[in-house]
Length: 111
Image (cartoon, rainbow, N blue to C red; front, side):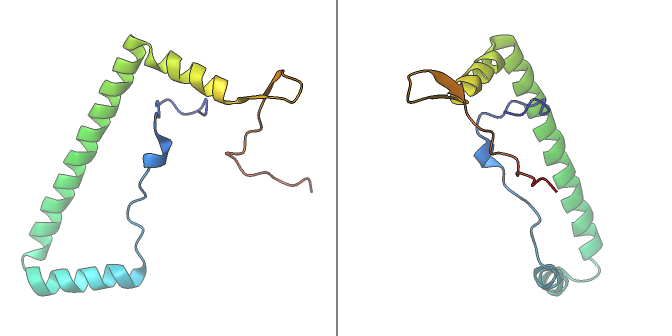
């Protein structure tokens, strides 16, 4: 776990990228929306959709804040940190424990 990230991430693989659309997909979606919703109702629908997305973002921020506070109170954060520290250790051929390499960031060549 990176020290710069203030949030506890128990499962970092659940990150789902959103809005990964090509221009053609975006134009096709707009065309379908204009055909089925109509040009007069489209601004109303878009405003309602934007309001719903904003509400979902606000709720997710509140839930994240709640879970972060709960993790701080219950000591889960310390447990996650200690487990991550143990994960970074590997056992060598000589039986000693060594810190493993951090491969989460790209390696830059010496130029």
